[in-house]
Length: 403
Length: 198
Ligand code: HEM
Ligand code: SF4
Ligand code: SF4
Image (cartoon, rainbow over all chains, first blue to last red; front, side, top):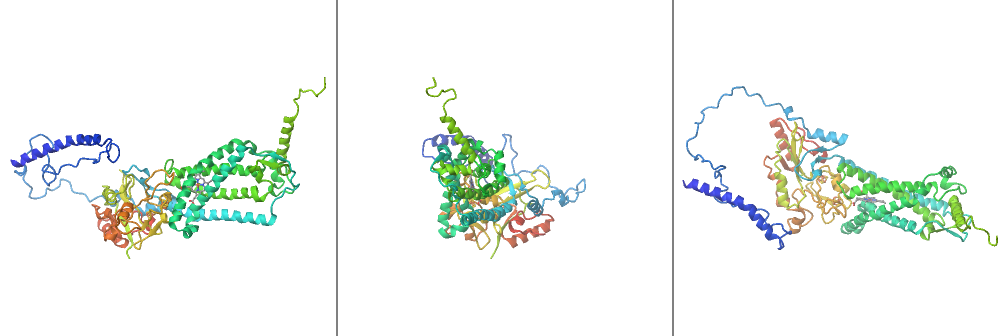
């Protein structure tokens, strides 16, 4: 008797606790507002700890689920126990063979994915979708790319280009203005063009240096400056890499706007290449940009676009693609970056020590008349024609004293 | 010296996620990060298996190979651990890891994804064993106390085994021989370039 009373009391307690719990939580919630609670509004205790009392816990202390009268426990069993097990009506068949469990094999699946690509994927209860991929053996291929291919291709591209340029400089020296300086100059690049060029150039150099640090720093710098300093450097280098992507990309857009028209291929370019291009005897005619400059322009626009796109994929991982896509983005980014560094090294060489009279086009904006005549004869003709037109009297004007 | 490994007997795993919960609780792993997870393949179809997966502590670990700041180190027991003070959160280890083990506090990589976190095999990090600072960075160090990882210790069906590679492989082999089936040691081919033949 006392037992059933306890049971009922326990039930009432639990029911009370159930009703009281949300109310208590709510109270906690409102109390938490504005006070020194952990986060504004969040209750300090996230759920009410249920009382462990008479009504809960314990092996047989179950709580009735209905209000119906419960048969008292401990009485006579409704049916007496069988003395012997019943004989089954139908014979029990042997358990299904193993194959009925599905022939899932870890070894086979892993081997197959390793050889043919793809991932072993399933389902998890986690919100993180990347967690559903159980095994992606491609990680090993990506490692191979980054630690072998990118490492050596990059080294060959950067060191090889520097060596090649040094050799060129030693063998043929600085390309002079053949006719000497004329003393007259002509405007080649306006302020917007120059400022934009240097914005892109500075971002590119810092992007390149911070990028190369990611590829080679652990090998080349870490042993010298120590792990802590190297981590600090690489961390800030990464920040620089990410923030400078914005001026770099902006600059590319401006370059499209201001230089695209002058970089469309023309018949003159074919003649320029046929004449021998950069190593031609004499100076084949060229417009504002020659074929090599146009090629560099299109290469930088295309390559810069690819590097920027893949870079943003790396910067916001798993927003547009999965782990395989991230790996591809990195492969594109790394390879394109290395090739671009090589190309820009060559560009910087010609623009500075490689050729007399070239750098001032991007510093003061004005180039020597003779330099323009030698390297961009058609452009010079156009410009002078334009200038003549500008200073010429209007066609309807009559000469002084004509009437 | 032992070579510590994990082995998940997928024919025993009931996807109760107790290992996941135990791990999160033991190390006070922050929100959004799961050092261990249970993946169910062929869900609801023939051949369904649930596999509890975390860092496998690979031989010749890919994560360590690609880390641009070289912050990983190996222990004498074959564990792959890392130094959070050196990590820059670039996310490369996740691209290289075959098991999706590395986890990050932040989703975007803009300014880094925060210090990478992964299963330590309950062996902490480079800090003084069982110190306060080790606990806040890496969680508890059960190995230093002579205990095995909690996930495997408390697995109700003993599907998840942790310990010396040879010993757990022989336990698994014996099971497979007795019951007549087994889907194999998940991840072993990829992590250790070996399989448990039965
Ligand atoms: C235009 C926008 C760009 C963006 C958004 C971008 C973004 C990134 C990101 C997110 C990474 C991954 C590494 C990390 O986060 O620490 C990376 C790596 C790298 N980036 Fe860029 N980047 C850009 C442009 C460039 C340019 C112009 C270069 C070359 C001059 C370059 C060279 C590299 C290199 C070499 C790596 C390291 C590859 C490796 O070793 O794994 N990036 N970039
Ligand atoms: S499972 Fe992933 S994180 Fe762990 S050692 Fe292997 S590659 Fe590194
Ligand atoms: S996230 Fe950290 S541990 Fe992983 S590769 Fe990058 S720096 Fe290394």
